[in-house]
Length: 589
Image (cartoon, rainbow, N blue to C red; front, top):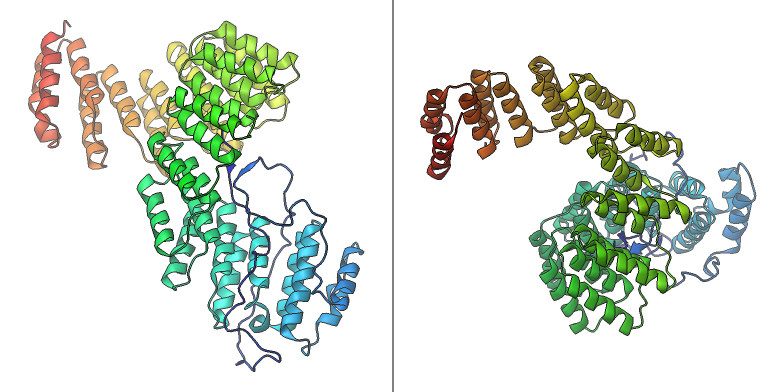
């Protein structure tokens, strides 16, 4: 797979513009306002830094990798305050920051001092304390002096990193209450904070507000917004409309923009669009980097354009970017998902010959490929090699093995893998549970023990998970096939109460169950209900009813059902009615 798409903003934007209007020293007298900041009930959790995967197009930080030092603009008094904060297990903010409490300190100097302290504390992984300093500054100097400054986007970024997006949003509201409009950096920081916490729709609402207020987005703003669209799997036309707006604003795309756009092409296998973006990128004078090539290669792999993917690999090497484990995993994934397993194994051998060790993604991709192809012997060989080489399985590995054993009816082995998963401190996800549900659901139909499926449904909820449509549909189908329509209806009601919308599979499961139990009036009522709810019946819906009548020796009623379909479903086409009539005529029941 290509590297994970994410955009991490630096605490301070490169060359930030001052807020408007810029205060001159001494600051002008401002009207007294009654606004007070919302109380902070609990300190934010510490930042999590070390477990992140490689990110696609990290924001450029010119100081990355260099020794950190406090800004030379920071005064001696703030350096002393910082020393006091860093060298105390439970620092007293009022005592440590007393030298910065004077209203006579020039505003520019105060902002530099506070910014230096906050950035230093964040560098030393004391983000809680950094936010406490910001709150102290608001109390000591008032929002009118603190919020319209470069401190605001820094605080918003910190809150986003500390998983406090609502507090970040309240800061922007507090700035508006002072009478000063937010600038691009404040808006961008909030959009990024919301995105970081998966509040993608809220992030886009902030972007819409920014445009409504005629605050011109920067290149960083647009890149964050494109990242949000990527996370939402937005239609391609919506993504390109953002790029068109960006260009019309006179903001040329940069390398991160192009890398993001190519990555967006993966979900829809938009290989032609990805190629056009790649060509435009080079025509604009920007050189593709390793991320660009890996993203393009991933698009080709998902689009089953294997020769094009190998061409990218050759160009990548020719440009001085040696393929990495990410590169080979993308290629192997493309071949494995297409069922071209011999070539996938050749790529694994090729990467090993170049000194690149297969990782858990490599092995799991191959294992899943062999499982899907029904080649259990090869899948188990991959699992054994993985264990022999000391490569620890991940949740996806366990899920692939559970699915393989379950589909083959090897329940003992399946449950052994499930117990091993939990023994190794993995939390089963919805894929794990649904694999178990599918097995126990089918087994329950045969044995009459459908309660086992419902118990799994309950365990998903008990462990903090959220069953999806597949989960509910599986249990409904199991109960329905046993003729336990009261239980199936109960699960259906639970599905609706959960906020999910029944789909065609849900309704067809009900209809098939009623038909199996010769309850044709109820089956037709379900058809009426699904049409009323905006779910269009498909051919399986009607085939199930027609076949059911015929199996009961009631072909005349099947014919009457077909003749009255226009009344039941005015939207049905003549071609569909004709196919049903042909099916009835050919039936041998």
